[in-house]
Image (cartoon, rainbow, N blue to C red; front, side):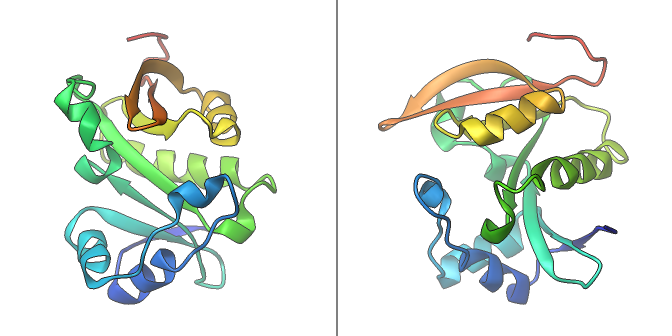
Length: 162
């Protein structure tokens, strides 16, 4: 499959915001609103398209990839590229994650030499397994309300730990 990255547009943002995940992943469902569209257009959000130019997922970098409460506790002090990703619901749990994520990582590594960090809800074992499989290592855990999160880092030099 030949994948490509495009900047988020209003059309893509509307599509992504309408995705609905099944439980327990419904935690990631979003609400279509003008404010949500504006966020996806204002910050560094991108879509990943397949051979047929269909959206298969999206990702963001920087501040929108962080859980805001983590910043309050200095979770994000280390200088890394923060990423957030979302795979189209119909494609999850079918072995598509590794191709999708490694494509995004290669794209980011072409333009930035920093380590890559992501934040994941700890109940999302499926995602954590994928992240570990491509070289991410757990760093810091924290709670936002009743949800536990953890940061994971993929080091450029291959070293483990933080």
